[in-house]
Amino acid sequence: MTRFPLHSSSLTLLCLMLAGCLGSITRGPGEWHETTLTEPPTPEITDYLPAATPLGHEEVVSDEYFIQWMLFGGETESGPLPALHARHYRGNHPGPRPLVILVPVWGDGMYAFPSSSLQRHIVRRAGGEIDVLEIAGGAPLIRWDQLGQAPDPESFIEQLAETVERYRSSALTIRGMLDWAERHPELDGSRVAIVGFSVGALAAANVLGTDERFRTGALIMGPAELGTVFANCGGRSGAVREQVLDRLDWSLEEYETRVGEVLAPADPAHGDFRFDPQRLLIMDAMLDRCIPRNSRRALWETTGRPKRISFIASHRQAFLSQSVLGLHFGNRRIYRFLREHLLE
Image (cartoon, rainbow, N blue to C red; front, side):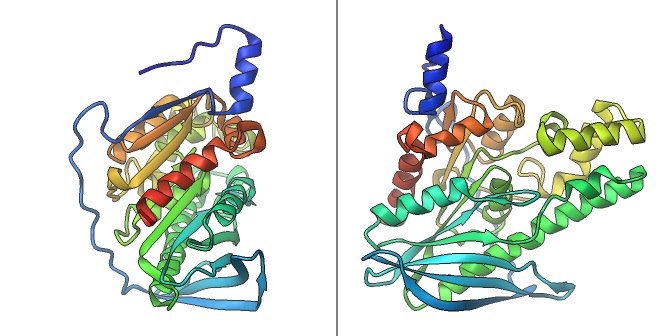
């Protein structure tokens, strides 16, 4: 495996700005050892009733695409599923067309740059042959304020457990998008892909690992070993960690262990998931302090060592590969992978 040495600050800056055009390492599926393919389980979809509602009127985006807002949700025996707003970019190529579902960075809110950048890349290049469903609105999955204000260990654990349920129930809403695609006269329900970004990749992994109907998918800067991620990540996660450690008088090791145990059902490395590495693409960042090396490795291992592209960049800087600074290298590689599995 070839690595790119960083001998000077100027070379480091160049690698980070290009974010993968010069600074990336690609590994093929099962490249380092033989991987036994695991068959994903047949999903049990009788436990919920999906719903999809068009909102407003369809508008013209380009000569090849129209756009319409959609509202997805549904019902289960325990109550309603989380409602998700999405933009449907409908191509004008004669159907049935494949569909790509995009899950944005989705934790305490939705951050659209990575998913919107890929959406624009697909719409500009697919010639109306691929539809895109970009999730663009929904309730937070991680409620940092409530976690940070938990007065005792029991309350903190309860808030974490609710986080797991939000991820699992949101995965059902996303699976309902595939049900909608299977019923749509212009879409091919057997050619549906899902792409998730950062914590949105965690939601995408919860979908891919439980529903074999998805043809392919990509997890971009996604996490595994969630206890380790919570123990290392900065920003809101780091602020909450300091509050909890101080208030509950926990050590960092105890915090990591307890968080990991509670979040295990939603963790790709520990939950009841199965993945086909031949149908999956992973992108990660080698200088990622939020998702450290063992977490990135765990995601790759637990998914069967699929094709993997590693950027010599931090977590946020790696997303520059989806911008003009990175010559859209990330978008081009994701799009190429999707075309190979959906059109060729």
